[in-house]
Image (tube, rainbow, N blue to C red; front, side, top):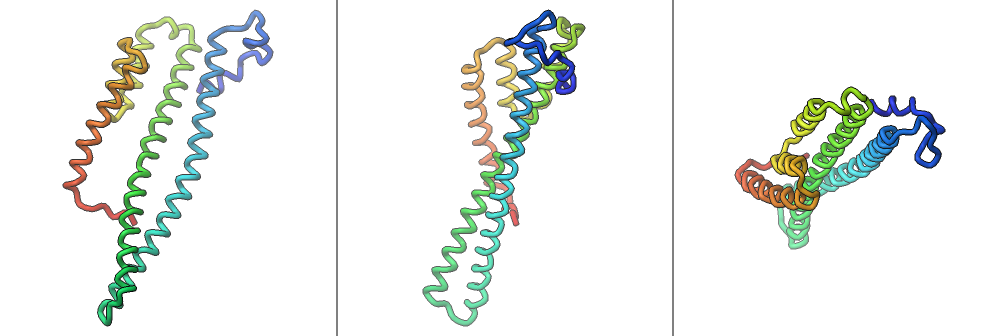
Length: 200
């Protein structure tokens, strides 16, 4: 972990107070450690919020299902206009709640990517902190291959390849967004043929 290595740097030496032990490598590692700490705090804070939202939606869905069950039970005796309207509202609530929870899947994708970014920063920090690896093209190539192998989506691999080939971030992102949209269309088409998923 570069966080442990970074603790060994001279605390009195830095860009604002350089001495003979100052190096741009140490400064780079410090900034990487900062970025990783920010990623960790973001993941921790957002996890709490998503957990609270999921719990709230779970309770709402259960209440909506109870209303539907009450309607089905009372329908055997008599169905009043008010009861019909209650059932209609409850069914609509269930549909919207299910759609919202499916949308929460974005968070799984987000956390996975942030964990990959954190791992990449850590591996990069260890590489540049080792003089034997810093000027070794094979070590850099190995790191790049390792990073690429972590991607699960083709659009991510394409973006990686384009940036490694020298494309600008804007060009790579444009390709990524186009490919991501196409993959989502295919996924949505496949989902239409699948059986309904029980969320609760």
